[in-house]
Length: 233
Image 1: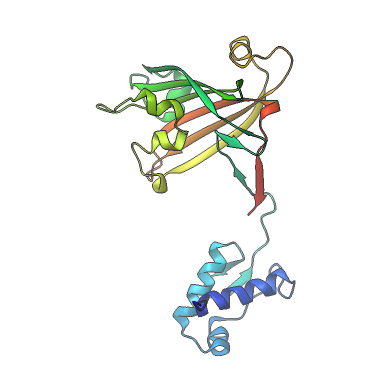
Image 2 (image 1 turned 180 degrees about the horizontal axis):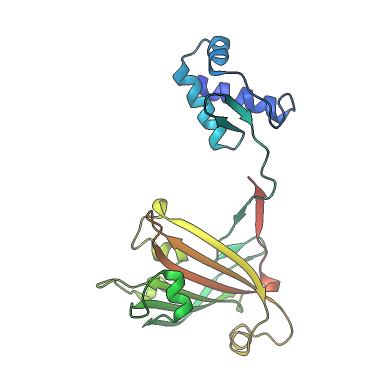
């Protein structure tokens, strides 16, 4: 059985003190020298432990003074989102309505940080579950000369898969905006809505490592077919 590295053990011991209330918000943790002596390790090992605690949000550092227990971020959550699958529903079929190269309007050009003369690929789809339309989906990808458009691949691809044709997934940054709105006549027709079922609107934006937008996607879900889940950081 592989032994846990010493620097991880040190980080876990300090985390345990914080989680059990032995160390509270604002308390100073032991100095690097004190931790070195306690565990009989080098300063480099201790600094690797402290880096873990800082990255995970347990402590913060004040240069020249030391390290202190950080106040927990109760207002931050990690939201689990997959446009093809959520906690109450999975998409089992998609219908490709349109793939077209268009010019962006003012709002879209601003989101993508491009001129109105730049070409954009527009993709419109309907998502189905057991024969019922559950979401109207529209994507806008910045178009590059020679960029292939394979409709068969687009029909079933998620948004991350679409933009990864240009930039590796691991190097992307992403934003998500969630809102609620009433369905207009077009979306009512696409989603077979005959009453006042609200739409959950999820807007995604992907950027590269230089924060240059790659694409914007908006999915309009019937409110009775989606539920998102998140947990605190």
